[in-house]
Length: 359
Ligand code: SF4
Image 1 (spheres, rainbow, N blue to C red):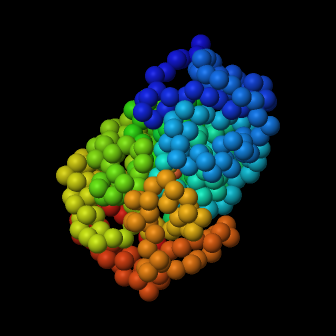
Image 2: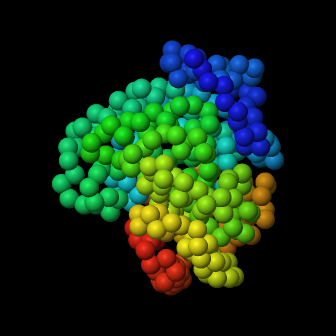
C-alpha cells in the first residue's frame, strides 16, 4: 500500500511531475506517481534535458517556485562506481540529481542551468544491486584510508541532498537498509536538512550523515530553503541515538570581515549542545568556497545579496577543477593562512573533533 505523506509545504508542494515514459515499468516509479495523484504529469524523452526547465533563463526569478512545485522522474543510465579519496572511498551511482533547496553556491546548479528541481531515479533496485556487487568484489578493507579505518565508504549524495530526497520516495530508506546488510561497507552523505523521518531508518552505525554547518547569519543569506543551522546542530544527538554516525562538514567556508569570530561562536554552540557520546564519534571535513563565473552571472539575476559574499575577485584566483571546469578559489597565498587559522581555532574550541581533511 502506498503511504501518502505530508510534505513540508514551504519546501515541497509538488504540482507538476515531468517523467520519462519508462518510469512506469519500475515499482518505485509507480509508487511515486501514486503518492502525488492530483498533479499534472508531463512525459519527456529525458530527465536530463527538459528545455522549459533547465535551459530556460527566464525561470531564474521563479527558481524557488520551480524547486518547490516540480518533480522530475527518470531512469538512471550509468551505474558505474568511481574511486574517490576524500569523504569516501567510492562514489555510488546517484539516486537523484537536483535539489528542492537553493544554496547560492551549489555546483549542481552550475551544471544544470537555470532550474534544477529534484530529479529522482526510479530504478533503485538496479542501483542497489550495482553497489552490492561492487562492495562484494572489494572484500575486506586491507588497510585504513582517510574516509574510514575499517569499512569501505560509499558517497551517496554528490548531486542532491538525500534528507530531502527521502521526502519524495523510499530510495534513501532502501539505501540505508542495504548498507545495514553489507558487512564491509558504510554509506555517507552530507545534508543541510533535518528530516525526522530518517530517525526511523535504523542504520545500525552503517550510515555516516554529515551535517553541513556555517555561521547562522551567513547561512540565512546563502543556504536558501535549508533547515536553520541551529536546528541542524540540535539534531545531532538525536541522529546519533537513532544509530547514525554523525559527522560535520564545515563547507563551504566563506571569508568575510569577522568570519573567524562567527565560526568561534558556532563552535561554542556545538560544544554547548553535543552529548559526550556525540562528541566521542565526531569528525569533520573543512572545505573553503569555490565559485565560478557562470554561477556568478546567474546569481546576480536571482540573489545579488549572496553574491556580495561569494564573489570576491580581489581574494580569488582561477583554478581548473578535477572535472576540468574553470572555477575560482581563494588565492593560494591567502588560503594557506586561512586554513591554518581555521584549523587552529577548531582544535582549540572543539578538541574532540577530528579533522579528516581541510583545503
Ligand atoms: S543542499 Fe546541496 S544539493 Fe541542495 S542546493 Fe544546497 S548545495 Fe545544492
